[in-house]
Length: 183
Image 1 (cartoon, rainbow, N blue to C red):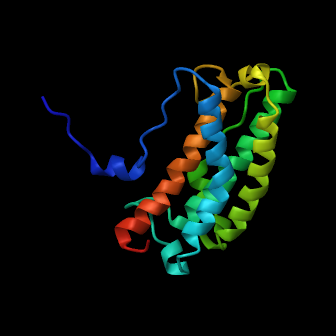
Image 2: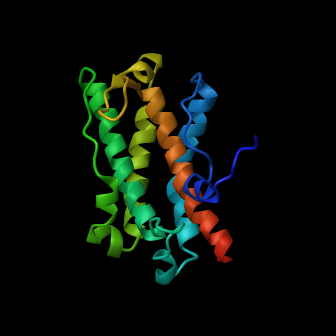
């Protein structure tokens, strides 16, 4: 029996769904840190080629617009930075999730220039990367709780997740640009 292929899944997950790494290594950590380091400039390069009408184009049918994706990245990665700090300063904190879909429907995510959120990402990522670069093995093993996951999440896991998240949403934008002939 052949597996059916869903093109909508390719649009939703253009680099594939997040997979929990079997093992965390210095190389995998560095790859995730590179994704965080590079995301603000990569986003800036991508969206600087677009006009406001293109910023308001969804990356897939029923998906977020380019503008909303950029603002979502700032929302999500600000939360990530705070989650890292909580994990490092409290004993296995339970973090509070937020309604991402509701946040991108608010007027700031629908209306504001996405460069504002790229500026936020520059600062948040500079601080987060610097924080993580100072980690030893014991910090990577620190855990936090998330009500939507059925296990403790290590900061190693969180780094891998947010490295993937950076590449995932950047690819939403660049794939749209390629499909539309904007690149």
